[in-house]
Length: 217
Length: 262
Image (tube, rainbow over all chains, first blue to last red; front, side, top):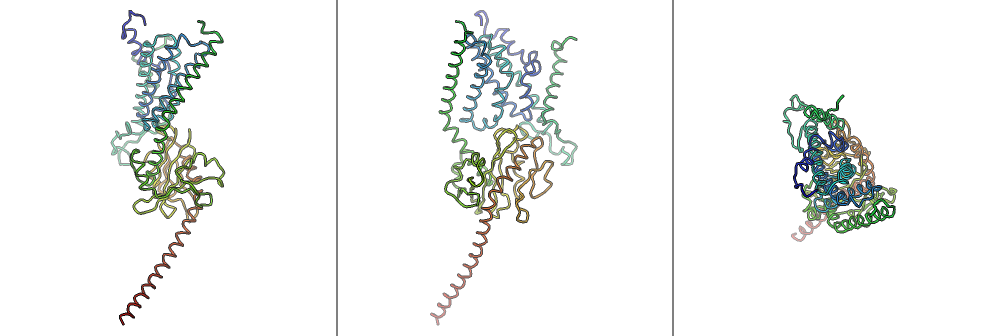
């Protein structure tokens, strides 16, 4: 960061706002799709995953950015992986010791964080080339970009697939067919393909609103 | 400094590995006690939950001693062996040949009735699944069951640890006219069958894992159950005999009394 620049200059703010829309990691860069499919059946795990990615991505981005001039370019991918894996294991260990319930909730996602392409992608594309503060902002921005997609998809999948939000019944029970009503949960919504279709619909809406994303023919 | 020299690359990698190893092993050592006590408390909490005692984890240690009256280790013939059920690591035992396995069994007293708790362990989709199932003292009817998993798919297979899946196990039976049939987790619904419970949509492999786990684990305890059934019959017979004896004694005592009065 040059001295002329303030902490929240226009450029720096863009690092946070761009990934929310025009440079969204999921809908524009198409990264992190695997976890968007796996853990969006319910809202709660999706939010937990989003927070975990936020922590790991922002810290890893800063660590890599601090080491960027020391890292030999031939093994830089390995170094990035080691940093991510170390952070994830640390977070996992601490959760297991002090907030055991959250750690149980995370279970398989901890492993999924390591393989999340967004993290490696941001380290390689941004952390390796920019200062720590910018890298931190970039990490936060991309995590939020990832988070809102995840939460939006999980919202629709849980509501339409199970009739609940945060495992609390939202659709009135009297609406259901078995109780003499007219409504049934859409079983398709809890299966992975519907996550992809939901993401697709979000991309569609986004492109209708933001014409700059549409490729010229 | 040239960061792309071979010697630098090797040096960097070596130092990085050492630093990371120190950080990770250090954290692991520091946090091990706290983690182990969490795991132990959770196990006690789950054992209690399998006999319908639902408590928070922090009070599990005290309540456990109140309810659990015996922790047995059995062999494949159903005979009691030395040791405590709580110390048996089921994940290691199920890999051994059945004749060498230690079979843990907990006995709880709930509302003046004995409940027999069998720990379960099997394979889900992504990793191990486990649980505890308790039986009434007819050694046939399920009193309650809990299941848990290491990493099943959230919202799908992972739902086996929810009560909507576990509650239907209550009152199911594992024997059909004396023959072992286990309990089947049925895709598409149990429809009231006494040996079946509803499976989870989208969690078929985990549901099948529960079926296999129940089948494999429960049949190991049948010899013990048979022994206990036989014992119970003997006890009933001897109790009846004793009652008769006592009556006779009372008779003689009252006769003596009468004679003295006479």
